Image 1 (cartoon, rainbow, N blue to C red):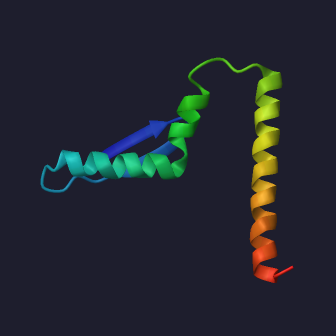
Image 2 (cartoon, helix red, strand yellow):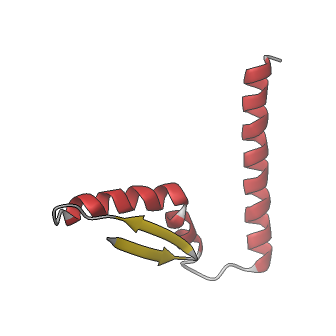
Image 3 (cartoon, rainbow, N blue to C red):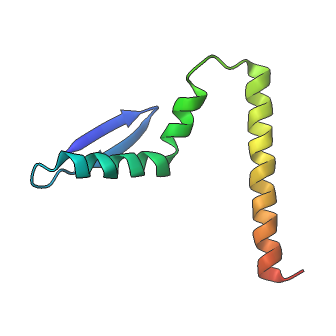
Length: 77
C-alpha cells in the first residue's frame, strides 16, 4: 500500500500482486483528480502576494462563469 502526503493531501493506493506499475498509474490519476499537480506547479517558484491575489481572483471568476453557464443550460434562459 502506498500512502503519500503531498501539500497536506493524503493519497492512498493499494498494490495488488506486486503490480507496482498499475499502482503508479492509479496514483497518478488520483493525484490529477485531487489537484496535486496544479499545486506542485504553483509552488515550483515563489509567488508574490499580488500575483497570488490576481491568480485567485481569476480562478474565482472562471468558477463563477462555469457555474452560471451550467445554471443557464439547466434553466434554459
